[in-house]
Image 1 (cartoon, rainbow, N blue to C red):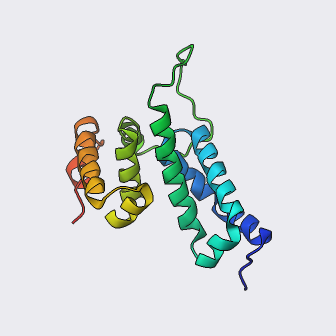
Image 2 (image 1 turned 90 degrees about the horizontal axis):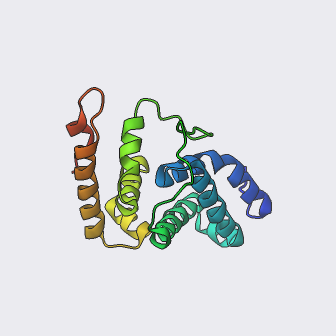
Amino acid sequence: MESKTGPEGFEEFVRGRAAGLLRYGYVLTGSSHDAADLVQEALVRLGAGWSRVRQKGNPEGYVRTTMARLYISWWRRRRRELLVSEVPDRPGHDGEPALNEQSGLWQALLRLPPGRRAVLVLRYYEVCTDEEIASILGVSRGTVRSQAARGLEQLSKTWEPADGSTAALLKEPT
């Protein structure tokens, strides 16, 4: 089957990858609403340059890189707490991915500074190399390694899995 390079190909791409991109956005942001905004903005940018990006052969890589960069840009601009008028009685679960077994890990990830979280998400969730992460985030390879080490150290202090296997899960890749 021949791939489509026009608007139809774009719509096909969006239909096929939207759920995965939303999961990726949620892991980056920790919020289903922010994840949806992140995906929408990245797809708007992809749509504007669809034919050019499609010709290069990796539209998903383009979208994920765009999402990571947008996320970093957003938290650099925000850098403050989100204040609410009332504390909710219970945590909300409005369509967020089910993280039953590892919810403690995800909560610990959400407590990390956004840059460290982005590095760990790209390294362990997206399985990117240090070079790929550096390129996506626009930082040096050394920064990636130091942020990963600091993030893992912070996680090891704040998160303990139910089976006590922290050391194995937080082991630095060789």
